[in-house]
Image 1 (cartoon, one colour):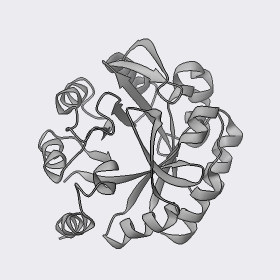
Image 2 (cartoon, helix red, strand yellow):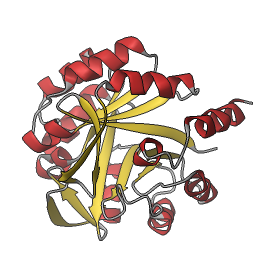
Image 3 (cartoon, one colour):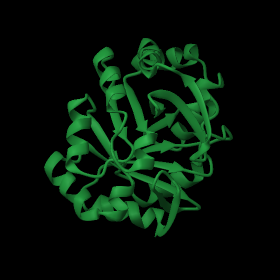
Image 4 (cartoon, one colour):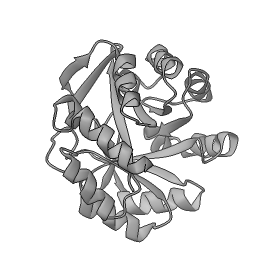
Length: 244
């Protein structure tokens, strides 16, 4: 069964969502992300994806105190990303309770640093963030699209030791119109033994079921919950089924 990973995106310490990475589309859903995290944990959720959107834009960790509150008030396994650029950023994230971190822009712009993180912290704690627009890698809080092809990019880092990748189709993110299941199938065919975490576009439990049927190991979703397209009761039911 597919692993369910709710997302909490943070701007100014608040739980927000964007549409296709556009900061001007920001919508605030909660003033207290730790309360949102607790509601997920109450449904039986085990894992959480936290993104420091301020950090992604500024290129340094910013909302680490929010991470610290979530980690101290829940037992969720947290992966954290957004603007991580140096060893100090990772140390802060891990010290504040993240079990894993996601490197996106850094893996493109400073691959030597990213490889050093892999050596120092291990591939169980480092996730590759492969965000794409039209199957080209995008960086800098999705403000810049590169010429790097998505699947060869993932294949290269897999050869270098990466075992987990979060792939977000930017064109689908926040649209609630369904994930890029065909794209994820292509990734699975090309790199079958990587732990692929799909992200972007989930608008219903059926979308999650479709990803599960496609063999995708895990899925990140956020706006669907905040807009009531997936209810906490549905999440609780699904987690109960997973644990039977």
